[in-house]
Length: 224
Image: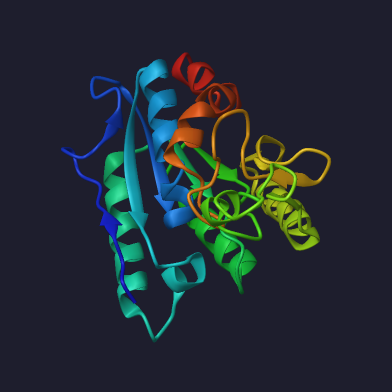
């Protein structure tokens, strides 16, 4: 299983390098995809942003998966590193797959001990087809490349919100930025929001920075 690690250190970061407060984005590729937007928010709010992500390892893998021991080994290292960094906010995104709820609950409980605040983003709703393939197909229209918001994802968003509420952390429902009236288009304005079936594009992540910023409450955190 291939993995990419954006490893945190004092020399790797985004946002404002002169910032006195630090936000960490933690998780797998479904957290990594938010980095362009989170970096813009951090820069505007004069915060440092440090990625602490390992792709191709999911939250259940961080806890224990004998097939991929490198995931739990990395997770142990990541917790020790975050403890040393003293982050003010940790942002993570849910990733809806088998066993995700138990994995997210476990990780949230761990991260709560390492930061002043933890913010959980719901997973992006995703599409039924790669948007590029659909949009380039013969006779494609915006209507033929729009997909119904799947019931399983709506239920997953409710579950993620419940996890956040029970853990006493912040929750951001991202679905309204991708779907309207339970229809999810392959083009929003002039932007293709997804890079593939489920990962959002860097362009759309940056586009959503003005939506993310007030919900992350970094300016409020900065003054307290």
